Image: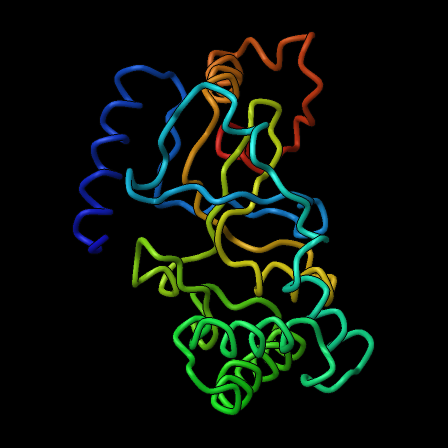
Length: 226
């Protein structure tokens, strides 16, 4: 998906949201979230741009635990346990994929994967450890199938009906931020659940958070309404 298409669909949803809702969020304004509070992830297609409001059960179906991924375990093995890359499940997954499928994330040779991908993660970890999280840092990035420029953006998330921050892109940066106990990192919101947007509208009207909704008033996606 070319960048101009992302901007087009993002602008379309922004226009639509401003007509329908009392508290439409600026799709290009990052939300700062606490990495330690993120527990689950799912793929959310970026084909419709940023800031889409959508109902349904997308925020409940197909979610997976972040802690049950090779990325999470492998980065912990490397940067918490101090293992060599070759001893991690992260490296093992890449090695098996290259042996079975001929490539892994664009790498056809495990030595090149070690030299570039793993070394890049070492550099990213040291940078974040020394300087904290730097917005738009693109030394190492995830490369989803539907876009080529995501590394120029912040990590991508969805926000469920109850305010759950659901990670969609930028797993390496998230896990490293968790390991380094970084307080907050900026993210772009791909999608908000319709019920969550209705709660934002209620807050914007001055009605506050409905009494039947168990939502922290300090939720990061409510701070633009303060």
